[in-house]
Amino acid sequence: MRPVDKSLFQGNKQSYIPYGDAKDDLIKAIGGFCSYCERQGFRSALAVEHIQDKKSFPALELEWSNFLLSCTSCNSIKDTKAITDTLLPDRDNTYDVFMYLNDGFIQVKPDLDNDLKDKARALINLAGLDRVPSKRGYSGNDTLWLDRKGSWVLANRYLQKYQNKDCDIETIIDLALNNGFWSVWMQVFETYPDVQKELINAFSGTQKKFFQPILTL
Ligand SMILES: [Zn+2]
Image (cartoon, rainbow, N blue to C red; front, side, top):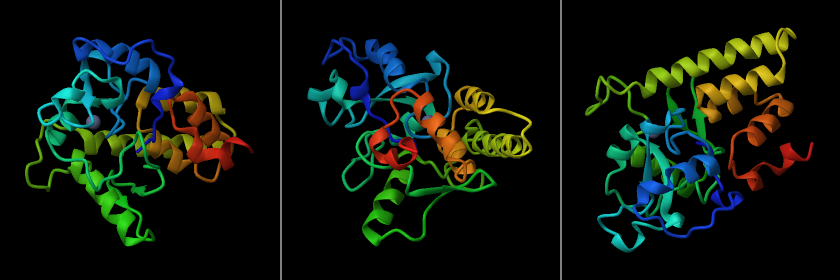
């Protein structure tokens, strides 16, 4: 999951009335992607997401500091779940803790310490990121798993082209921006820091402090 930093965007508001008015500024700040599943979303497919849910924390309903973007699927799965003891993309390095597999699955990296593993697992559960057809409660209308698998296949196809010098970095970045799933592209190109660097820079609001070794290459 892409870690994000909204403070890179110079907005002039702390509060939005109604909160839905924050959507365009959020898209400018962190790109038009679901903050949880990372799917690329057209404007109406994305909702202003309350990190602390607005039913339990009404005082935070209009606050920029409490906003992310999410697709309708992740939004409804997250609902009013508590965010204690979980990692979050606007405060933690949510890239380093997950592995993306070629069948479209997401998995917590096995070599983390137990506390971090629990918090990463909690984040998967928060937005149901491991939803697949065999899982209870999975809706056939939800194409997250297939979308992520498709992104994996596409990224690997362009990895081969890149290795064969059949495409340039710009093409890869254009595809990633249009396809979403930043983390999948980052992982597929993990041995190509030049590509990773452009992925970090091209997606608005990516939290750069976690990627200094790549950015300073
Ligand atoms: Zn989503």
